[in-house]
Image (cartoon, rainbow, N blue to C red; front, side, top):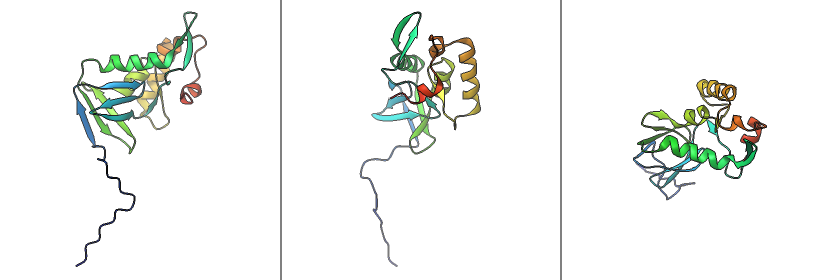
Length: 149
C-alpha cells in the first residue's frame, strides 16, 4: 500500500475555521470585521468604503466612514458568531442578529445579487424611508456603492 501526500498549492498558514466566535469584534469598514485576528467579509452585502462622499443636510460627509460606525453600533457589546458561507464570505451575527441584514436595514449597505431575498426587501424599505445613505441629496446609486473602493 502506497500513501501519497500531495501538497500542490498547499498553504502553511491556518485555514479559516467554519465558525468563528468572539466576545469582541472590530469593524474595518461597513462590510468587514475582525474576529480573533481574522479579517472576515460579510456575506451578501457591499457597503461604501471610507472616502465615499455623499451630501447629507447640505454637508459633504464621508459616508463610508459612517457605514463603518453603523456596523460598530450593531456589534457593540454583543457576542459575534460568524459562519463561513463561501470561501471568502461569512454570515456574522451579533447576539443572533444578522449583521449583513442589519447594515441593509439601517441603509448603509446594499445587497449583492446572491444575497437572501429579505436583504433586497430591506433595501427597498430603507430607500423608501430614506434611511442611512438614502438620506443623501442626491442619493447614491446602488452601482456607485458597488464600485466604491
